[in-house]
Image (tube, rainbow, N blue to C red; front, top):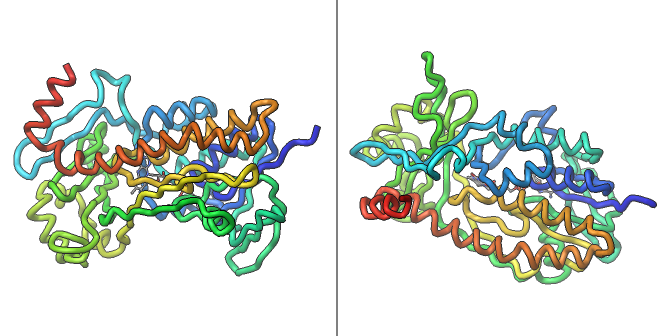
Length: 384
Ligand code: FAD
């Protein structure tokens, strides 16, 4: 019997994991990825440097046989370490013991591990190949490389794992409107770095925590990296009255603001001026679609189908969960592709909608309520 070929667009976190799972289930899988191979050219992120991996994502990695490898390169986070402007910082644990924790992982390291695993399972990757157009009637895609050279490729089953700005989604939406709605959050983010400590202690602050500096309408968070540094993310309104990225256009303005609002954090970021001036402000939106697929020809997965704001740390985790559901459905004997895609949307869309709403709510909780004494009292009662 000839193997069914599945063409994936995007070899990021979700695309690479899905490719491995499909190859292990007997499909011939080819992946077209816009960027160069990060294992040769170095990883070019564009998004957060590290991410929180939670149980949902870990379960998918267990299914792929990769959980242990990933956890060896991760830092355990037992809870939220909340840093008030004045007063004592405190750890709010996620669970009663270390069986309920989340993990900080490097986006680049994880992506490369997933690419290796997919390749070992027989997946073919085509790097420097960006989807430019998709003719869904002719089942043909057009790809461009860095020099603008175009090539055509036959693709009978297409899956778009090409992220929040998905080119496949745009092509599908032109062919048949998907009911797309994009809601910008109005807040942006900027990444800064706490370097490793110089003495015997590798980490300058508590390593086994997700640090939060809640300040009401905005906040900073920090996640640990295995080599001892922390990636700090400042979340702030993009525009409008002080403080916003508009009113803090450069490091001079921002360092005065940090001295006032984040007095314990600023001294931990020795390259504050360089980080602030050199790193871009990222934007944040929630993507809602009514349809994720066009019969059995094309389907969207991960951020391409349901990009969310990062405050629950669940975008990748939710995308990883997608991959297991989809691979299982496609591998079910007797089920055709159109039916598998429809069932995938039926199962996953309510979950994606729920996590999108929870992620928006959690921004308010993280930047505000975690520091509220009433919340702390309630939480303590709830926990015991
Ligand atoms: P992406 O990671 O965006 O990958 C898409 C891939 O497609 C990329 O490799 C890209 O190069 C490729 N591509 C794009 N266009 C084309 C094209 N035209 N042709 C070919 N290839 C293309 N999630 C969590 O679970 N935990 C967290 O703690 C967390 N923190 C976050 C913090 C921030 C600041 C942000 C912005 C997001 C965070 N997320 C987090 C969300 C997470 O980053 C995404 O959900 C996840 O990256 C989605 O994976 P993906 O593979 O669907 O998309």
